[in-house]
Length: 542
Image (cartoon, rainbow, N blue to C red; front, side, top):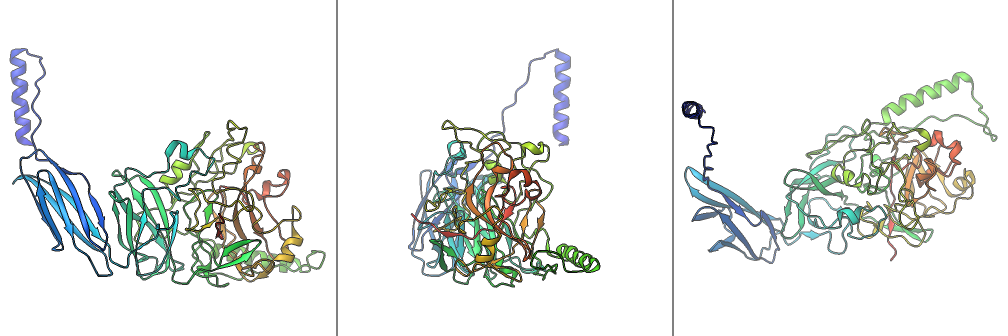
């Protein structure tokens, strides 16, 4: 630095003496440079050949490899790698370095080559999706060149503007990993090490660890932008189906490790309606909630002192139960829940691109919109009519068709291959707007949830949910389960919410948001698409 400063000072003195204002241009330093046509690749266990093209401003270059199972040859500016068959179970990696120039002026480019073991399973072989079911201590690969299931089936205009293909990927990492662990000591080693991305093949490879749980793997561009992400659901317990209302239902919530009625591992993940990426439920253990006593006409049968004692205990229990879960394990992400409002979006595809880039950010309802115009949504802040006269906000179909018997998956559906979010009517026909008789006839209350006695007999836990502001609540008390139906006439803010099934406590039941909008203000969280609730997937029927 001192030498440069002295040199610049001498130049200024010359300019001052000659009165010459002509700009002096110095040639750029000719530093060594080397670039490769690719940075990474995958070779099957059967072996194979990979060719890399080398670009450099030097007349010669050399290559080194840290693995003896890779043979190499050079011809012109082409480097060819030869790999034999590999019979082991675990993946193996080689790092190849291409060096151009002479000391001290050298440039180095690195290439990573992964050969998968013979037990590596391709989770995308039959179908692509936004989530995949995996077992512990296993090796997998997923397609990372296509969004969701790759289907152009949504009414959001996202596909038109952003396409189905994923391009520009540079590397993959783990955003977060978490298991159902109240003291947060085991929420790591769900994904072992760092995922491997091969741009040439368009795949991400990863190995699961010893712990069951959930994780999200993200594909990033060179500058760190998230291009897409996938939910990896690691469970060793076999997932089975059962029939109800003409549908084949998964035996547990999406992301759950079991369906035991008193185990917090039955909660699964929570989703804002229409988003593909999950949010974590409370990590707190279940707590039995006290209830008020009523007679057959629903009149209180307890004293005032007893009533307030129960209310005080409910408040105390809720503080213990409802905890925003921020576990990331060995991931590189950061959770953002309450306090972050969805960006203003007045035109489709709204906030979908933002949600893709920020899968751990809860997009809360905006508070700067008059209540009469509130849409209770993260997607857009106003409805938009398409050329067919359909309101885009109300009929966005981010999670598929609303009609029974027409269930299919969009690219935003969060369910694993072969499954989708339940369609309209999945929980049966609701006889009235309050539906007390339906719940009494179809469901049986248990300590931490309800059993669908009128359906497949499965247990549906009271998972809790996030309201439209990003606050978690109602863990152990109520259950909310999404369907794919989105309804509304485009004129009522509350009418733009998506339907879901809701069962309340053993005193009062309801189905929301099938209330009259004029009395629904107090219940805006139930059914508002900005809230986050559980999903019980059903088999896709094609």
